[in-house]
Length: 102
Image (tube, rainbow, N blue to C red; front, side):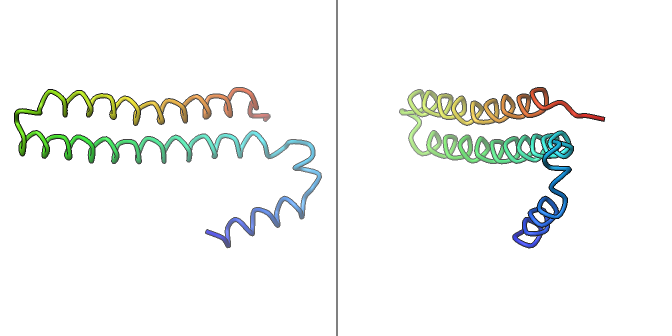
């Protein structure tokens, strides 16, 4: 990971004219938006799966508290999903504020 980051930094410093003319902003914005949304969607899906599994396990252990556990689970799932929505908003900003130039 650090090797590829170092190569990217060297490429920017090796070709300062392209970076100054914003020739790379569009393609890097698309890559950043795609990677960010992929990570957010995947990790939010894993988090939601773990939350539901823990809630079902808790409901199986204490059926009397199922309503309270379900309410807490739904609130937690909404908060987890909001993280993916925030990343989607940032991805849309990256894609449409810095449009791809030819």
